[in-house]
Length: 358
Length: 263
Image (tube, rainbow over all chains, first blue to last red; front, side, top):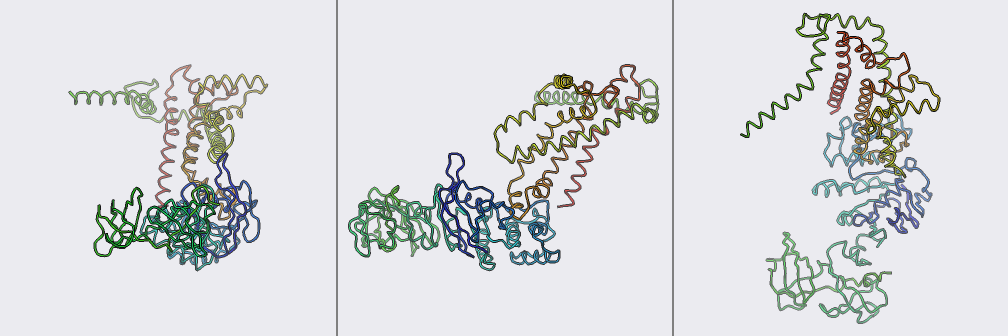
């Protein structure tokens, strides 16, 4: 177990800046997620920590020790891949024992450790089978067992769930988190799936185009995004052009043609600069539809995406298109219906105009 | 109308195969002919030509030379081929395409040109012809086949396996021997068989490169044919076909047997 720290870490491939000056600390025993669309540099960071890529500049510290020049096989890390990467010519037992061979473990201990790790991933008794005889989910459990049996300082997970089908993914997500809690290893998890990130992480690092956009707890990055990118990447939200109408001690009042004046709490306007322009972010689930004639902005329902207990509405206010996700109470609103929209200012976020983020 | 075209096509196809395989079948049958003069009708079944073959010291010597040459060629070409493929597939460096082309080029250059070229080169550097140089030449001819087969397989082996092994504590060399090579084995085996067969069959380049007095099986047959068509040659042909066809079949069968045992 160890704390991992990245200091001004940079990686470029030729002209392409894959990672720009990443500064981030992964606390001992915590579960950290690098989240972002493909090509944002999250996997490159993971590969640099693992030693599969060499940083262009900057430092990587594990447990306070700079490991930039330590070759991968001497870093004592557990690595789990998207495609499991179990050695197809070795049995499950041999796969798990592979890392122990290089660690002076006695024969009796090897057998015991294999059994223990198979118990941890809840697949006892498969030592003598070959990887091809197991299902995808089972193979990923074995890959996890192989990575944790060496008692790594850090566990690195490169989209380990994305090759699994949807049901299994949800199940494995809970289990993976439970195992990590139990063995308490510092973990760095890479994913493009926001629900995985929100469900599992102690800390989420949102990345875009090689840059870290925001670092925070799941609650922070979801409810208080600091940039338009984070706001639109996590969850469904509406972004409106706004004018700063007033600033008080508790709130920034944003004025939009659609909703008039909205007082956004200061805690939700952390990244807003001094300028007169801003963007108002409204989560789709915080925009409530009420029948016509109720208090609120009038809107027309353009389309309804019925999802059982939820409905997603595509709405139009003047020229502006909005999305709202509401629980269905009785009948959903129909297409073409005129409704009134209510929004909760405390759930809104004031963001700087794009490109002006500090 | 349509069925007529089809039956014509069928007949044509069969004819092509007959034309290709009939001579081989003739050799196989005549090898067991009792008569002194090779030809039909066959006068009786006999193994006397095989006995004569076993007693012919020149042929036995040629066979021994060919086998040794083939095995060593397979060893050298396979080793070099694997090393080249590791570099070409797993690493990025300047001039990679040029080197690939260079490695494959012996296939493209007519063998006679290659043979004469090497011979002139050897004379230029004042190196006499020897078994070692013949072996070198055969290895050059066999190398492209090994590279092509091994390269295709290596591209198919995801790097994840090697990266996983490295992360678990294996050094680059340990990773190669524990993970990459075993996964590469079917292609290595196929490549080695290719190399052996190519060396064992080769006559054009061998005629140019062999030191005087040294015969391989093909050059020995060629020499014997100059005097007369002896039935011994049929027997020798039978042995050669057995080796060049039987060996790959045997290897394929063994490979399948081991695969099945594993799964």
